[in-house]
Length: 57
Image (tube, rainbow, N blue to C red; front, side, top):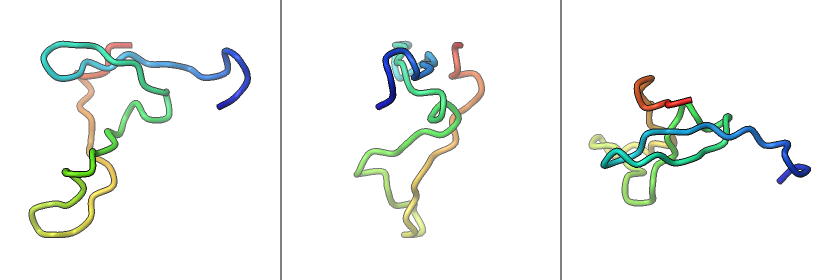
């Protein structure tokens, strides 16, 4: 973590209409949970694309 106030937060619309705050660096990519790490082809997936509609501001 950086100095106090150095992290820029962005609001993201999560599941069921809730909003969550994430760091600006993680705003465009959704980091998957452990159960969603593998795709249907069996390859490891690090990030999922986040839709532009989900970014509230």
